[in-house]
Image (cartoon, rainbow, N blue to C red; front, side, top):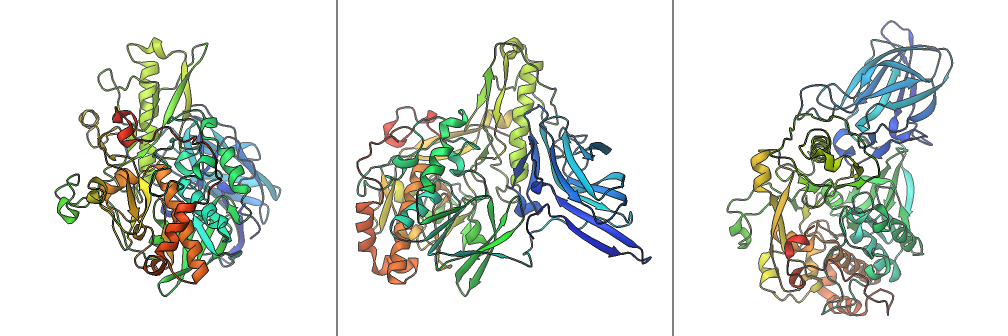
Length: 614
């Protein structure tokens, strides 16, 4: 399969022994995306990446591709799509688009019906030539989405089941490495470069076209946490080489310096970066991973990456989950670890995901469409703001894995609904008449989901009481910063809150045990990022990105020792801890650089902690 204008074209025999032709086109493989974007965030749930028309209320340019059908004839056409506001509104949704065949519209508007991902029958089209142009024509700019197009000359044939990932018959060889790092956020970037500078051949795999994770221009969360702290002040030094120098959430794209990050990674001769590759399967022997299989989010090609060691920097603990690693999600009970910040009874609540946004002031007035799909804003409950950053947080009472598309969609829904009210109906709408939406995220910024369990589980006492561990590694400086639904927002939108508040428990900077950085039952798996071995309460401190970057540095160092001695991660703690400490003392960073990361450090350095949350 060279590329996935996955035109699965075949000739079928129907019950009447007539020849029937069929074509299946995955829209993410369209050669011209126009203004549509590839969204892979939910492919584990609904079976595929898809194209989304994210125009913030302004229709986007057509996406198109050329296909070749097996034969001329009359084709019945279906489109797999989703009416994304259906969880809140029982009616036609806003994501309207049309399918064009050779420039002519086929059937009715799409994306407005149903309440799940489903095949919608478009109609019939007569094709007098075998080369055909397919186009998606957006009508609203409100996040219409299309996964696939199916065409058949047998009108009794239904589209294929299309809701689960399967291994391809042909899997390409991505190569063998000393270390495979999955996830190129701040933790993954740091882990890959740390290991590479110590001599390992590293594959760094990312499922988006840009790197940086929550600190990329797609999500726009600024870095947090303090570096250059004892006992290992060289840890965090890598961040001085690639970290953005400007602070602030939901700021213009250039503030997050995607290009600087990409240039930094590209100069590392021992790091091979693989973009747009989503890890979908793992292969194992006994308790060890032998390979990770990825799927390209546009072409559909699956590739196998082999190594003796792996690092899960996915945030969701995806590699660990696929490999059968022990994990937890939600809040532990207070008595399990003696945590005063934990609830009395364990539950499934997590911190939420943020869909950030901002508006821009222009010289002339602009309009915004009426947008009201089940969440009603009025003079009493509207947010009279011109931007939304970390406090716009959804899904705290929902599953951040299995319900994540709904969580992200609700984040967009409230942004559009509130903005529509401010522009069209609020008593002070004149204040907004020259403002237009400048940016709304469609890639949601997660804070919490699965946490993989190691030989030690970090908890509140470790941080609050500054407990000493002989295997202490990176430092965590951020306060215990646990978000919860805003009571006022809960009152206005019961069961559908979208705002968060926090209370900070300031801690003394404290080292985190190495034993939190490897899986307790998948013996060759490291983890770095928010999915390390810790409780929900401890995550409130360690989740900020400079801290996760230091985790990555430590994991890269430990991986180099595993390769040096031919051992597994646990054995570094048993037999080579002193050498790991020496590497942490020396660091892998370029020496002599000024600290350009001395903003948003958190903890005891701030007098008004409520403004520093993430």
